[in-house]
Length: 216
Ligand code: GRF
Image (tube, rainbow, N blue to C red):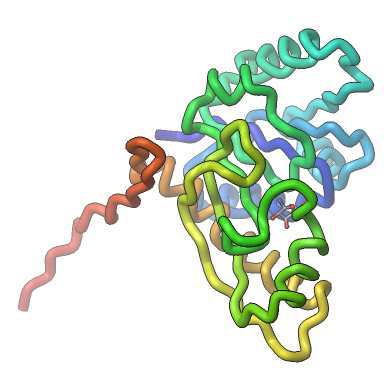
């Protein structure tokens, strides 16, 4: 299935760029048909506009009435024929109506090994500060489903990153971000290949069909 993606972002947009590049390099069978940001100044929105992507600024300022906000969001998603949503540094809660409409079709990336170091307040450098303070020797990145609770939905894919003695929150953030850029497009490709199965909040990744049976 070709994913018709919407990316929701609030910040720099480096994950958006990684996904965009993976599509260009034919590692990801998708189209980015919508970029939505609550932040008119975001790097994500700037990148989207510079690259001719369909981009909208939607926030409580552009749509102060919550009902209008939800209607506008859903309208934009339907107009762009979106079948999958990836949050890439989106700092707002996705309305419950949208989560229900796109059940098991919204994912997020988090810069730690959930369920540890997630939840309210655990964003940006706060996450890496908390990891360093805890003395954990490993951290990483997690792609997970989005449900109504922050950083709570079922985990789809994780990759570990070693924590070094010399790490500061910034150096750790940098290494984790590199891993994010690797695993986010890869996870989306698993969806494009129909290899992610969800049953009662349990995720199974089906192995790739084995086309090359070479026997000597
Ligand atoms: C990433 O660290 C991501 O895990 C978190 O927000 C950050 C977004 O970075 N949810 P960017 O805007 O994609 O560069």
